[in-house]
Amino acid sequence: MIRLIAAAGVLAALAAAPAAADDKPESAYIKSLRDCQTKTDPAQRLACYDSAVAAMVAASNEGEVRVVDREEVRQTRRKLFGFALPDLGIFGSKGDTPDAEEEAEITTLKTTITGVRAVNGKYIVITEEGAQWQIDEMPARLMKPKVGQPLEIKAGALGSYFLRINGQGGVKGRRVQ
Image (cartoon, rainbow, N blue to C red):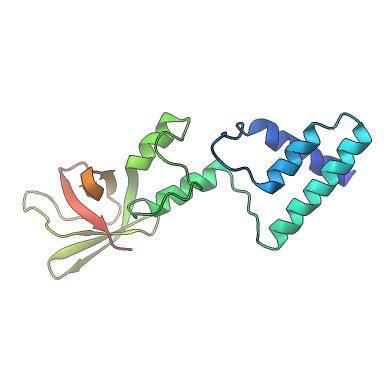
């Protein structure tokens, strides 16, 4: 009975997932599950799913496979925002998300300041995600950053970023940690 429930869960997950893109290689684990869908004999189909699910669970237990949901990917994108990372295809890329809000999040991060340090006339601003952003020049016309203030970080041209603290004008900054 447990195997039947596990197989049904895997089937539901596969049905909810978008079809694999032709240009992206498919995991052997997903391929084996997809192959089970073509079985017409219920006993063969169940045996196929039992085998495929057992292989996937074993791989998960050994750390070879990890299934993440959309929210985990979104949170990881927020934590990595501002770093220049190679496109590994695991966190999506521009134009790869079906949701306009998620698409905007790739180029803009709205967060809150949880810490501020002044170091040699420069400010290090710490966000709620744990990221540290350095502001080299803080114009006199702007108020200094404070804990609890909203922070909007927007990607600019050529890998630059603009930080808008508490709705004020933007200042150039860079991610340092």
